[in-house]
Each structure stands twice: as structure tokens, then as C-alpha cells.
Image (cartoon, rainbow, N blue to C red; front, side, top):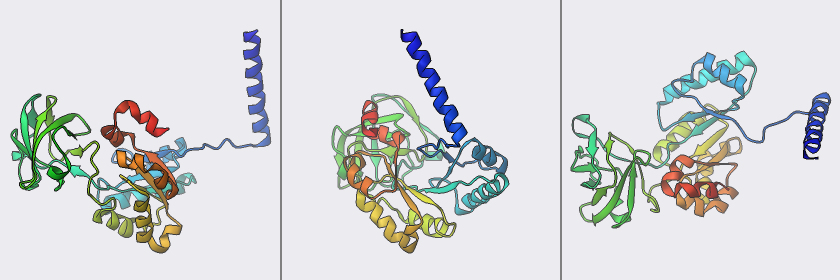
Length: 290
């Protein structure tokens, strides 16, 4: 019967498990457990707990924090490893190319209402209000067109492009939902091939002045778009490229389209579903991941 078959299967699984234990066969995980060490998780006691719970890669997010801040965290990690006798790899996650909204008048958040029109300027010195805001991407008016979508603040604010003034660097938009916009929020341009370098000057400084001296184990490269991005990083690392692994983070449509060449040049691969979900329909994320 089905029940007897089920019981027999359970016995076989249990016997196999017991046999593996007797033979001393280790069940090694096929994936790494990566934990971001931030303000709430960087103390020595907390890092020790993470190590004992199974963390084997510590992620240092260079989108935030100074070199001094990350050095303190790394020192804590090494103390925790000494205390527990558990080894853990160190990953430097680059900030990468990004587009952000600008500052606002008096630093006050702006209420945007569904249906209202607003102008986006590429003059980043402008202090924004309910009529005009700015974004850090200089080629915005050149790369979008009427009908294009601009997403802000992790996709919580959506604009539809109505018109572009390429000479003045202005984009007229309609707000598609009611929301509050704060300062320096991230921006996504679905379907747009953004003309920004994958490896920024900040990334290079973080890698050469912090990562290499601290003998990190791997670099998670943000917003990888093509295989040559990895080649550039290896050239930057020089002789250190032999000892530092490169993990590619695919976060936009261009990266998905160039998956094969990116994979061929990568040591590891990460599907960054957060930013990728801003670029392609969320129901297609799982297909992209496969």
C-alpha cells in the first residue's frame, strides 16, 4: 500500500543517514551562508553567534560606511574567529554605479500625489520641492523617452516620462502613485542601458586601499553588465587577482542578457533580486534566476 511504501522510504532514509554518521561522512552544504555585518551585527559577541550558527562568508557593504568603520568590523570578525576557532571568508561588496535623487529644500520630504506632474533636472545642485527634483544621472534626458518609467526609493515611487528637453537636461514626468520622497533615494531606469562605469573611482579605492591590504577573499561586483567588467577588475587587482574570487551581481536587464559571458568570467554568481525586480517584471524574476 501507499502507507507501507511511505514507511519503507522513511526507514531507508533513516538507515542511510545512520550509516553516513557511522562512516563519518560529512554533509557539506552546496551554498555559502553569507551574512552582512552592519551596525546591529558587528559586535564580537554577535559575530561569534553568527559563526556558530553557520555563517561562512561575512559581507562588508561598501555602499555605506567609511574604511575606518569597516576596519573595526573586520577586527571584530577576526577576534570572533580566534575565540570560536571557526573560519569565515571576507567579502567586499562594491557600491557600484548608482543613480540617486538629490537633496530637498530644508531637508524636508516631499509629498507627491498620484497624477501630478513634476520636472526632473540633471542639475544636482538643485534643492528639490513638489515641482522639481533632481537626479544624479547626467544623461537622463538623453536615455529616456516619453512612455519610459522611472522608479525611485526601491520602486515605491513610479514616474512616467511625458517629455524630454535634451539641451536643458530636463525630464517632465507624471507621478503614478501617492508617496513621500526623501533625500538621496535610489533610482532605477527599467530597460535603459545606463552609460556609467561598472567599476567607479570609489570602488577602485575601496578595493585597492582596503580590500587588498586586508587580504579579503572575494569581491561582490555590483551591477555587472558584461564579461569585460570582470576582466577590468582582474586587471585592477594585478597579482592579487589569483587570491581574490570575483562574484558577479546581476541586477539589470543588460546583465541578464549577457549572462553566459558574465558566468564564464566569474568565480561565483549572485542574482540580486531586489534591484533586478525593479528592472524586470517581478513574475519574471524566477525565470531569470533559473
